[in-house]
Image 1 (cartoon, rainbow, N blue to C red):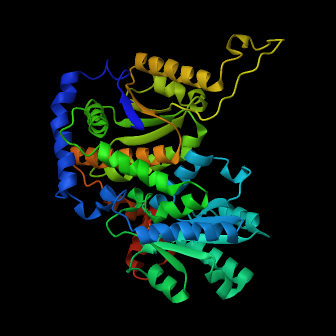
Image 2: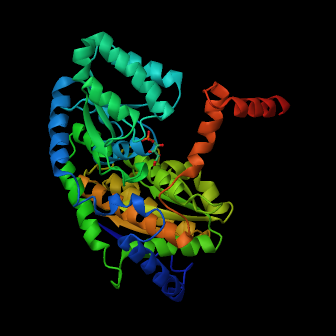
Image 3: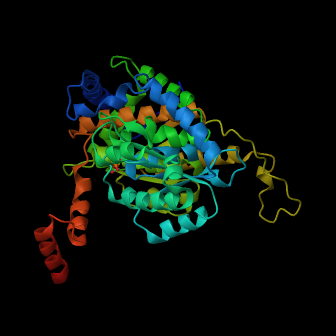
Length: 447
Ligand code: PA5
C-alpha cells in the first residue's frame, strides 16, 4: 500500500472503544456509497473511475498532450475550483511548484480563469507575448464567469495571433458530454473536446480529462496515476476488513468533530504539497460544509508555517486537529554542509541530510502539538510519484464521501456556491435579476 495511517499521535485523544462504537456507522456509509443508495447518488461516477473510464478518450488525451508539447511553449489551463485544482496539485506534487522554471521538454503551464483579477490576467498576457500558446478551457457547466472571461480573452489572443483556423488547432475544451453552451460552441468551432462525465462532480474530477490532460502535458505518467487510484480502490473496497484506513480516517475526523474539534488542518512538510492542500480544502469544504455543519478544512506547510500559524496551533483555541502527510521517500538527498566558523552553532547537524532534519522537525512538532492538546492523524505516504498521487487522491475522495454521509450531509452538491454568484449577477445588471439588483443596492446604500 502506498499509504497507511499511523495512530501514535491520536492515542491520548481517542479511546479504542470510541472508534469501535462509530466504526459500524462508517462501514454502513461505505456500503451505502457502494450500493449507490445514498443521497447524491447520481454523482458517484468517480467511485469506479480508476477502472471504468473511457479508454478511447484516455488514449486521445495522451495524443493531444504530445501534440500540445510540440505546438506550444506555454499551455494555459483555464478553469476554477474542481476544474483546475487537481491538475495544479498533481503538477506541483509530482513535478515541482517551480515546474515552469525547471529545465524540461514540456511547455510551461499557467492557470487562468480562477479569479477575477485584472492584474493576474494582464501579467499572464504579458508573459505570453512572443511565445507559442495553446489553451485548455475546462468548465463542466460552461457558464462559470471566471473561466468564461479568461476564455474570451485567450480565444481572441489566439485568433489574432494564428487566425481563426490556426487558433482552432490550439484550443482544447473539457466540458460536459452533450449539454451546455460550451460543448455546442466548441463543436461548431471545431475545437477538440474532452468530457467531464455527468456523474462526476468538479471536485471529484481530477482523474477525468479535467485533470489528466494538463497533467499529461506536464509529462507526468497518467497511466501510473490511474493505477495508483485503481489499487487504492481495491485496498479500500472491503467494508468488513479488520483494517481499512478510509474508514479509520472518516471515523477519527468525525470523533474529533463531535468533541468540538471543528477545524482540521492538513499539514505537509514540503512546499510541493501546497496545491494538494488547496485541492483537499475544496474537496472537504464543498463536500461537508453545509446545513450549518462540517469540519472547517485549513492547511499549512511546515516548517514554514511553524513560524506563523505554529503559535496558534500550539497554544491557541483548542478546536483543532491535524492530519499530517509524511512523504517517506524524499526522492533527493541533500547533505547539510560543515562550516569551519560555525557561527550559527549548527555543526552538530552537519553531514545529516535535509530530509533527516525535516523528519525530525515533524516528529518534534507532532509531540509538541500533542502536548498542546492537538490530536494528529499521521498519513504515511511512500513517495511523491504519480502512482502515490493517484492513490492519495482516491483515499481522500472516498474518505470524504464516507465522512459526509457520517455527518449526515449530501457530499456531492454545493448549493452554497450559488449565493455570491446570484448577488454578483444582480449587481452587474444581468437580465432577469432586476428586482434583486434593487434590493441589494438598497442594502448597500443603507450599510
Ligand atoms: O467542485 C465543483 O463542482 C466546483 O468547484 C466547480 O468545479 C467549479 O465551480 C467550476 O465549475 P465549472 O466546471 O462548471 O466551471
